[in-house]
Length: 212
Image 1: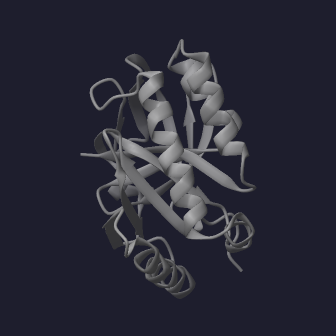
Image 2: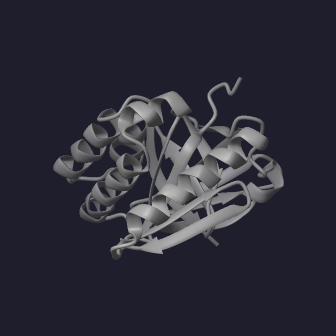
């Protein structure tokens, strides 16, 4: 069985290039632009991704998390195969990504003001919307779960490998906390839109694609 694993699809869309879909799982990545052949390409992506998932783990260990990362775009995934199927497959993930990207932009999230640094000693330092915070982290490379513990709170999310880097994702409540309480994003409309998108599909996780 696959417990709490991100199965199905993960996509990332660059902040200023929302027409470009990038998908990755483990060490395998796929990319496509929105052309007339997109649907057939996405169909093959789903088959390949599910094959990789069923064949074995994340292809991503704790050492791969270490380093300096910066926001590169929106990301989303589903928690298991059943939720992906109910949501409507790859098109649902793509639609979620396309809607998230402009709302992150409206919230003020950029490559320069949203960064994460993960150390080898399980400490981290980060900025979201230019607001710094730091603490310690734990990462379970078996299921991709991560916990970011600060003096004020603990944020629990998931990490996956993408074609370009990694994706750091959270459920609706945790993502809202990250943007509103930690990042002090003042655009309540954008924050609420991100929250509602995360809640729009059972088992959805939303967040940031990060690159070095």
